[in-house]
Length: 397
Ligand SMILES: C[S@@+](CC[C@H](N)C(=O)[O-])C[C@H]1O[C@@H](n2cnc3c(N)ncnc32)[C@H](O)[C@@H]1O
Ligand code: SF4
Image 1 (tube, rainbow, N blue to C red):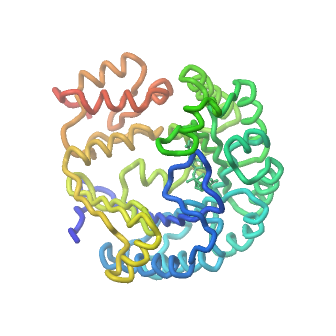
Image 2: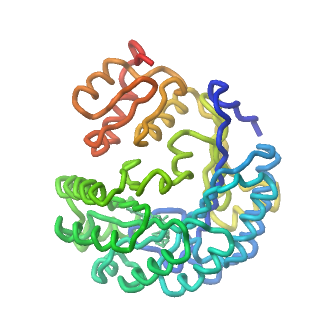
């Protein structure tokens, strides 16, 4: 494997984060296009073994580097036995060394069955639970094809609040026939659960999902663009009034300590390794940054690790353009913005930046560039315009 490039500009040492993908779910939600598989009959023991072996393989590439965060994502990692989660955390600590106070997050579904594992997950070392509530009324949960009720979600959130030092909740908005008033009330109900972090995601109709077919048939009617934009602005207003900072387009934290260290590692182009089926990783800075993807299907991932000691199925060394696009795509969404001095490739065009700044879409200050709240509403378009503009003069540092 290619050795990744060293730290950007020889500055502060790069962080190392670990993403663990657990691909199994009790049932597949009709809107979801993550790399997921039905849990029934799945062999979790061989997947766990493969993940542990894959971690050891990564250790021989990165060397011993302290890990700042572990994120168990999915899929549904709350289906893992607490002893399986503990084994992964122990392996990361033994192989790499966990930083003191490292963030250890796990995504959980709020069913009663999973809530029964919360105490065990806390004892295993999880300190931040990310609870997929999605909606807080039964009709909406049914329309989303979820298998938990609103009461179960509230019970799970209360239990999680009592067990974990940090609690994040995921919500989906712009749902079937959702009104502005519905959403305001629902945000209020979510705040009453006292999370310190909220991730409200606008419903995306993903190609090839059951939801895409239902929308085509008119069975599901998601918000149109105007309503979607209003719901986004309501989100910002309600959460800001409740003391939550929008530190990224879909991430709101109650104070700096509630920001996700792991997500910030992505947005600031740090290093992370990805283990588990379909997990992505990034190592090194600038052109020469290594991008890896693990085999998608659990059976292929397990076989790949058994045969070669690594689950990585694809590895690509990013060229300058690829590294540049990724740096800005991730960094501009972060509330603290990105540092142009660390950006690979051609600088952003000064004229395009000035145009976006004059339109109130982008802010600049010495050593940082970021999107304004208005720019976040149009994030994809604003970033694409900046990346595609011909670089003339660079932004003054
Ligand atoms: C990978 S899922 C895992 C969480 C967990 N399995 C659950 O469903 O609660 C992470 C989050 O992505 C969001 N999500 C998934 N599909 C989405 C879609 N099509 N549109 C918007 N948000 C989506 C949901 O809020 C979900 O909680
Ligand atoms: S939304 Fe969560 S539970 Fe539903 S299929 Fe996707 S990962 Fe699984």
